[in-house]
Image (cartoon, rainbow, N blue to C red):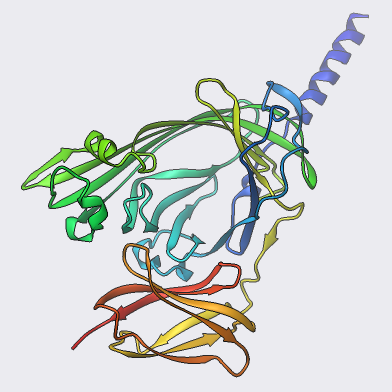
Length: 379
């Protein structure tokens, strides 16, 4: 009888262990991936990340009415600012002027820098490199795996690059400002099981994460750097994430999918679910890296006044050509109907000031499909 009980115990233990998923680097993003997600900002009381160890989560009631968000990843050299991040293998291109560069190893993917609109909403265009990379994904992960990482990034800009709407609200006029962002990620894989979302069912591992962020703003007055974080917050309370912030979320990960199946964000004090970001389609998509990419090119570049826009591998349809300044604001744009007979477009840019811009081609779904630098010179 004792032998039978021991055998039963070991059999049950083996089944228990085998039921636990291990997340490998198969869920790391690669060049060509297009990750599709949706956001439910009012998930309701039925959505709960409850329980530890083995669980079943039914998230089939999530709203499927919102737009699909697409995150596209390419080889790093396809980025406009790739020369600033020579150690990056992948770039994520979002919108007309935001690029995020990632370094990839066998056990982690790390964000090493970005170029685009600043992350706190100052209205400036920045190139920022992480002094300590931000952990994007890690592997392998299994039940009780720890996830801990500290990262930091900073950028400085001269005062004449700041919009007057910002400077006018400050009690001082700095020579320049510097923004520093320090992140600490602490978490543990504390549960696993089956998850149902609209469109699919997955075996998942859950990570219980807390992210701490401390964003400070310094002003240079003469030779001194002064912490003006509280002053800026008092003057401009709408700035995003300035000061200390804590973010709690549960991430449900499947080894078979590139998207996080669901990320559940909760209130820091009440643990009430506030929003859920979840995988939009049953099957992940990818782009054919060997297929010609649509592109927009300007000749000459640098340009004085007259410029020719050349469209290559662009399907017929309606498009906008937009030019963004260093603050990320569109300063010139025009709509065109593109067909096989309309691939070369002449325009006059004499109204643009001398400087460096970003030139983008945007389709009728407001998706940017090509971006490059444009330099305007004046004799």
